[in-house]
Image (cartoon, rainbow, N blue to C red; front, side, top):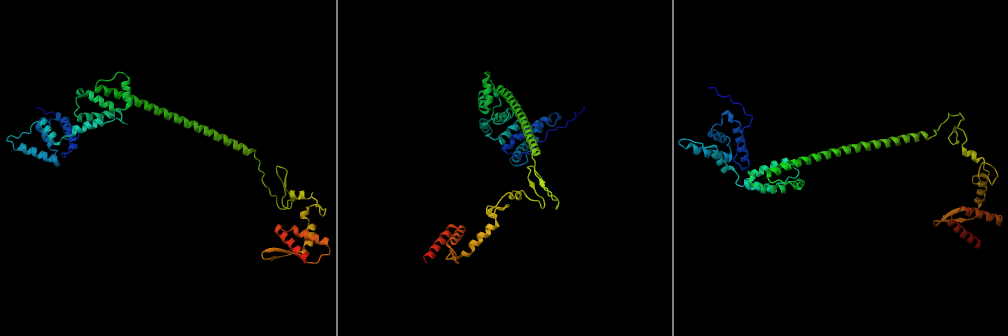
Length: 351
């Protein structure tokens, strides 16, 4: 009789188990999955094969101690019997299952909230806690589970479900309705985000176009203004050319050896002292010589005790000449010097 060919399983082998409470559920699930995946191969046709397979992965810590005690008990039998797979799992539950697992799961289930999770992500967590808490049969715990959902789901979803008037009466209906509503809300958020991105992009293009137009207009205006502006360029003719430069306003700037405009204006002025053209009285040399000659014989200045003392020396031929010299001298003094000079004159006259 031909033997059926064995097919290779792609399920990973279980990890070694250390006997800790937190790793027990994972180990049990790995063992159960591997056995189920290889059932058709005939590897686990008997319960003894399943028990022996599980014992072979209990190698460290408390799991190794459990396996040793279990084997010692079997080997002491006259006819060694590993028992059923169901009995072996019950023994493992008693040894490694956390006695507070259900209570801890119930507390976590009561505190569970959707928050930023999608409805699918929320129910994945909620269902794991529900089963760990002992609420596998939703039919017998509908009222309590619905109460937990009303507290855990986001307010917008709960208001939508209640607002329809058709309120679900079972946990499974609440679950299905929540998944549908949450998917619709996610779609609306995606459409709003796309609309905002489109509006933002359009605004940026408009702003860029407006800015570009304004910049172009300013640049064009500046170019136009620059074309209208006339800036005369100074020109120095070659030395000895005798030429000048004519500006846009008709003013002549002489070149080398050429008269300036101010020289031409001076030629029209007449001195009121000597009646000669070409200069003013303040520039008149004859007037300056006369003033110097009148003031020189009567003035000498000394510094005594930090004050300017003006003394008048020399013999004067007449009162008229003396008065004229005094006026000339006083005209060149400050107010303080004038007062000191008057005091000196008064002392001299009294003497």
